[in-house]
Length: 356
Ligand code: GN1
Ligand code: MG
Image 1 (cartoon, rainbow, N blue to C red):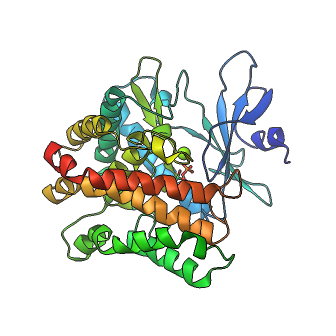
Image 2 (cartoon, rainbow, N blue to C red):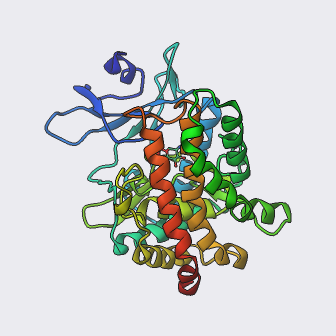
């Protein structure tokens, strides 16, 4: 175990750090809270950047710096005070860098957002607010002039994700394919339908915009009165279809159970959440959203449980090399849960279109 106190001490932190403790439940990076007073809220957040996944840490941190600076300027222009609660602020190292490399691992530090809470599940009311906030996040970034690097190539490209699954199946590295044949076949039956977005893009009909690309419920900070403070987990901010932010939020928010719920009977796609989130999102994006984007929001709601099934399943077949797992079958359980969610969303496609 590394000396987390010593790592935190590499950053421009003037207070005396008293403790560093685990925080949150991301599947990729390891996150810690940095305490300067045991009886108060944490003051900073320390993160170990998963360098196997984010291989270009310079690009990663530069992207985040461009995004947060851009948003900060907009908020200042709008006269918002308490800026550090409305956009993440990263702390430089004592050498003026935006991350620290300890010879083995990469680390970064940001300010802990005061008096903030995260949720694993939301009500329709909170979904409406979240829809508006993610829409406004995209709107704020729509005039970002500096180009962002594509931090994970083809991150939300479903054709690419299907190819990864097919490669995993062909290699069958750990002999798990026979056990999951049913899911592979069901996925393949929908492959044509679910790759619509990539086709529209090639035909020049669908744009890419700067999106968050990890709009899970727990990537949004709320204050104690239910107002959204800011969006966190900015690693994957990059050009994508707006379907990414819309679909991935509903994948976590509209699901009536966790993404790794073993009891499939508990999983459904909640239309009240869909309705409320869509209303907020359409308000937040009213200045730029094209008809082709709006029309295909029900497709986006199906695409993300579908894509996440493909990703969890590929990782299971590959022998669990990407996502953190807590038990050997974890990626299989996740696959089944996401597939059930996909089927529920698919069954409600018409209803979604009517609501729109
Ligand atoms: C990962 O790091 P975390 O848990 O916020 C993943 C997302 C998946 C999600 C599934 C870089 O996000 O794409 O949707 O797990 N992030 C990356 O829970 O792959
Ligand atoms: Mg996260």
